[in-house]
Length: 526
Ligand SMILES: *[C@@H]1O[C@H](CO)[C@@H](O)[C@H](O)[C@H]1NC(C)=O
Image (cartoon, rainbow, N blue to C red):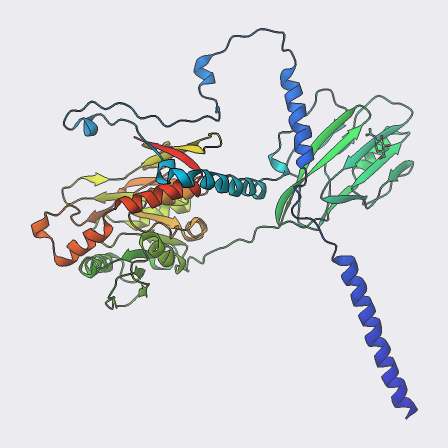
């Protein structure tokens, strides 16, 4: 009896003790952090003031403005201007002019103010989310005795590092002293050096002082930083100061990036069927799709073909290495692209339209070679029309900063520059709808399913600054006739044309997206 009693008692004690411990840990470890506050927003003001001060000095010395250079600088007041066209037949084709378009007209005058206000609100919170202390301008002052790392210091969230490169270089004096202050972490020392006084260990503000400069410098080599406010990807600003001087540097706080690697298959050379999946979207045109599949199979019998289909009465599309995904009726162009691309498990995805035909000029190994050997994420090819004309649809896209009305988007035919080692390829921002891309990168950008009908450049606008885009004119796919005379059209062709035709309502919807989602006020095109 007694034995049992003590057993029970000790078990109870253990449970109680565990409970106490647990509650203690919980109370210690679950400190809350205000995620709303923008760490360093007061700091930003301070830095801006300093930069302002530096720029205002020497204001008495005269200068002469160079208009040609001044015009190149952003002035945050962009406009979209069209060039006047001469009204002659074919003048548009012979002398392409800049055309311009504004987007606010896509809204009723009565709703525009409200839309503007909502957009401004969303934009402010976007800016807050996408900026960190690493975006501040920090100027290193001249003749400062402080030595510190200007970039490249990294720490994982909630982890500790030694801060490299800290030092103080000054004339011997009675007491040498430095302070370090952070906002998202705490300081400590990994070792203690004799005759150095360290105050504020485990806090956001640490002071190190000594009568002997070499000792202080030795101690500075052991200063550690521990991140305490968790954020997967941000930056802390550290103020490092001594009497009369302040320096600031940033520590990047970031989880290590987990790679996403694709197994290319064993053996030498490119295993196209292991590396590439062909993706397409179809709507009604099963005859064209079958021609495409047959042409692919002539050259690539085992490459997987993913088909997204939003026809009203879907027909089965079968065969080896074919995945046919049926979607709700009329979900649209980008929704289909999105679905098809989301199902790809190979390193690369090749996008084709359902009315393309592979020929002996459709050497997709060349795409793989460019993507394997360069930093490009997406590379477009050329599409040959029935007339024999080939198109690459190369464009550059740039965003000119505007005021609260939004930014201006400028799209131009052309490219940025050639690529060494690939004489048939160039770097651009947008290409034709026949391209190969790194699957993970294209999934990252995604195709906005709000774009229902004709849309293509919109994807490249979303991809600006995310994808490195190229274009090669030596990988050519053929296009079945685009412009067919009405009496030669089959019933499906007619139904398809009716559905694809951009109506004014879809155009307005697209303009609204540009205005709100991309915060653009206007567009120029040439
Ligand atoms: C360093 O920090 C201490 C304690 O907070 C403060 O008294 C001292 O003035 C600071 N020194 C400098 C140079 O900012």
